[in-house]
Length: 97
Image (spheres, rainbow, N blue to C red):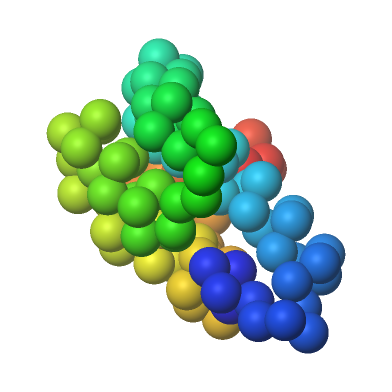
């Protein structure tokens, strides 16, 4: 699970690659401008500290004005990657996320 890989998998490839893919899928889902707002707000609110996955999801929901809980569940908590659909922030026709 990407959201909480545990000590044995903390530095594992899945935690990094799927995490980055999640951000790209989020960008596809909410757009460049809103993603920039989310990232800037995240950096500002967590400067000199830490934040949780749940904090990031709540922030993305608030900034985008959308309920992205199912989106994040599919990307961060499900054991396999989500299907390449527009809902999941994937561009199946282009063959990439």
